[in-house]
Each structure stands twice: as structure tokens, then as C-alpha cells.
Length: 486
Image (cartoon, rainbow, N blue to C red; front, side):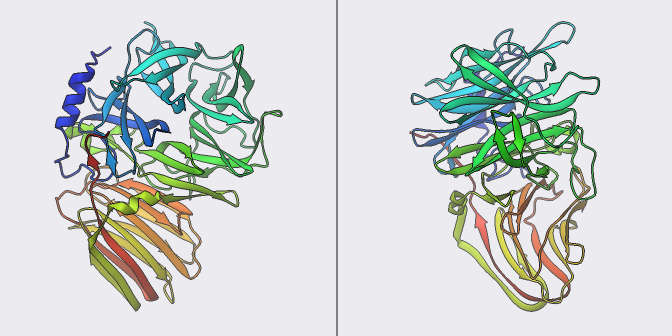
């Protein structure tokens, strides 16, 4: 194990703020050094949101997995990130893997997977609780499970707690130990005798990948949504185009029958290149999601690794469920990032072209009445480089192309999107991270661009025939503020 000196690591993080490199994002959570990935431990306590996330402070490899931690009251002002949880003993010597957070008796508690391997590389996984202390470190405490159940491999990880009728349950990502490994989730109930395995909920997906990671079990009124990340699905024309997926099925969870009843097909939460391992916080009737902007086993696609850091978290998104489909919209608090002195009104009628100069960080809201147009291109232009969002009204397909960017991965992503007369877009454009919301959050796409030059991008909207009307707003966005919090 590496030597984790919390005081020295925290001081190094603080000295790296504010970010200076042109590829560092201004309003996305990231770190001045090391590799971050899954958001973890989301919870709300004593007026503050707590956000933990996976972090390797020693390099840009998936090793030395620890948890970093920030606090915020408004998703704009944040505490300086700190090291909170790291490998210390034989149980988690090979990584403090993902898990959830909750509040008990006013204390922030975490529940995470301990990962350890023996000399032959054989993995052991266990699920452990901890409590956040006043010094910012998590005190490791009791185990819920010290091994994986029979019939499943040691790839049991990422516990997520939920309650039903006053009782507490856990959903755990898992892999069935069969001739062809099969992804699934396991549900446990907390009893006086400990955590009892109820089983894996039946579903209609069939063999659906070799591993399911990062499960979340959410309630939307009378409906349940099981979020998970299946690995091993082949790509299709309009979905499953990333190496690994992050999505959900919505229906009714029967704990008595151990089944997801009347559930939808598997739907992806994000259609972009760079989204995985989402976690959702439920607070005061809201479902607030953070995702990892990145993709496992694709580290070479992200050139910031050469600068000593890698990946971001998404902006917080508020989820709603309508007719079996999850809509994602930027958290309402993010409006406070708008700089009112730097705003533009976008307005035109019967036009095939609209251009605007963006800011160092921008939010763009566009309502496009299509009129006679059959195809529409929204281009982010970085000098000679560009990223294009292309919509075809005939095929009802949105395509995102990074083919004309130089650094990092390129490629295409395409998905079906219905727009009859009106196409709506809301974009958050950071230095490298872009998040695009379509049709009021019916779909969303997260992706990185790494422009060669340190220039503010331009926005171009073009169509193959006159658009009846384009209206919208463009705001400059402030950066996140990091500092001491009471």
C-alpha cells in the first residue's frame, strides 16, 4: 500500500486551487492531481450536502482507491476537497471501493466495499460501515458482510441502502458464478441477526452482461427505478455505444416476490461519450444525481493524464420519472452560476444561420421552431476544430460528432429523439466538459472535448432550410468557489 498522509495530501490539494491549466474545468468537480471516478456517499446532513468520490492521489491509474470529500450548501460554493477514506488494513488494502452515504444520529456515515487480493491475486470483497469524524477522516467500523455469498463471485460491490416500510435494505452489484458469468444485483434485509440475503430480483432482461455495478434503488411515487451499470453489452445502432453502460429499468419492486414487476426496457441515463457510475441522493422529495464523467478501461482517451490529473464529476441533476422514463434536468441551484452582467438574448426568425460568441464558461438555452428545416447542426467551434450536434427530423436521430477534434477520443454517438415542431437544447460548456440536455431533459449527453488552443469557443446554429424561429439565452457562468465553510 502507498503511504497515505492525510495532512500532506490535503495541503497539496489546497495549494492546487484555483486551477490554472486550460483544460481544468471551472464548474465541474475535479482534483488538481490524480484520478477520480465514481461519486460515492451522497447525503445531506446539518444543512450541507456531502459528496464523496473515488480518488487515486498518487497517479492516473485505477489503483490506491480512496475517497475524497467535499461539502456544499448550494452546489456553487464548496469546501476544499479532502482525503476522507483510504486503505489501511488487510480488508481494504487493495482499495476502498464504491458505496453510499447516510445520516444516523446527526452523523455522516458511509457504507463501502473493501477490496483485498492475496498473493495469487484472488479477490476478497466485504461491505463495511464508517463514520465521518471532525478531522475529516472516516473512522472504519463494523462489517455488514465479510465475504460474498455462495453462487456469486467476489465481484460483489457498491452497496446502496434503501428503506421500505420502516425497514432497511441493501442492493449490491454482483456477478453470478456460472459457466458464463452473469451480471445481477443482490438484495439484503437488515435484521436483528444481521444482514440477510433475500436474493436477486427477477426481471425480463435475460442474460444482460457479465457484471452489474453501482446499483441505486429509487422510489418515484408508486414506482421504483433500479439504476445499474451493466458491463458486456454489445453496441447497437442507437444505444449501448460506450464500452460500458449506465441506465435503469422502472417498474414495481416486490420484496416479497423478489422481482421487478411490469418493468420497462433498459434505458440509458446519458447518451454521451463520458458518463458512468451515477449515484443518486434523495432529499426533501428530490432525486439529485451525480455521475462520473469518464469511462472505465479507456484511460488513454483522456489526455489530461499527461498533466497529472484525470476525469470530472457531472453537474448535479434532478431526476423525475414520467411514463416510465427518467427525465434529467440541471439542479435548480445552478442558476446562481449565471453572471447577469454577461448575458445575451438569442432571437431570429426565418433564418438558416445564427452565431454567437461564448464565454470561458457558458450556459446556452435554445428553443428552435423547425419550420421548413429537416436537419439542424449546432456546432461548437474551437478555431479549426469543432464538435457538432446534428439533428435529422426525418429519422428523428440526434448525432454527436467529435471527429473534428484533435486531442482525446473522437467518434460518434447517436440516439433517437422525437421533436415534431420544436427542438429544445440546454448546454453547459466548460473548458473541456460539456453537458447537453435535450427536450427539457428527456435525454442528456455528457462528453469531453480537449481543444488544441486556449480559445473561447464559438457557437453556430445552421439548418438546411429556414428555421421558423430561434429564441433563447446565453449566460456566462461563474466558476465554483472553494474555501472554508462553517
